[in-house]
Length: 181
Image 1 (cartoon, rainbow, N blue to C red):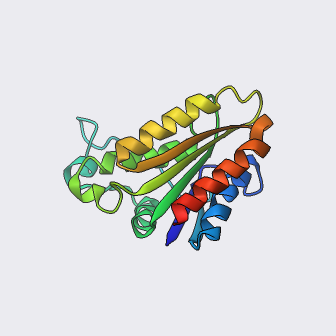
Image 2 (cartoon, rainbow, N blue to C red; image 1 turned 45 degrees about the vertical axis):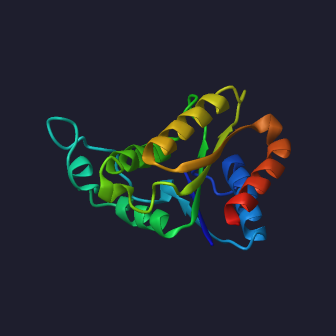
């Protein structure tokens, strides 16, 4: 069993990483091999909306024409048994790096070739808000919709406020154990 964590956070020791690590700790306890990917460290462009209709190879072929780290990361997702998507909350929504990646991902999954190895794959969403934490629920809903649209079987989408991290960590660990089985 392999669990891939994709984080839209710049800080591998921050709040988002701490909560994602709780999920991975649970997955490892269940015997899963865990891999971590930090999107801000990758070369990942935003969608170009290639043709005059706003689409391109994503809709026609299930692939993207942009030559960056996107295709390699999609391959990692296809090779994993489950995926944890973690994002800090910015303005009540996903981080820019996770948004850029998921916008392109949901476009390629409109085509049958793009759906391969993604549709039905278990996923866990983690949205971590600092500050007041008020945007965590909006972000978790946005992440859930984006992952569902791409075809993932979203097992949970956890909204975490910085004030409640100690209470949410055990739930994320349990969610990770469930993914790792």
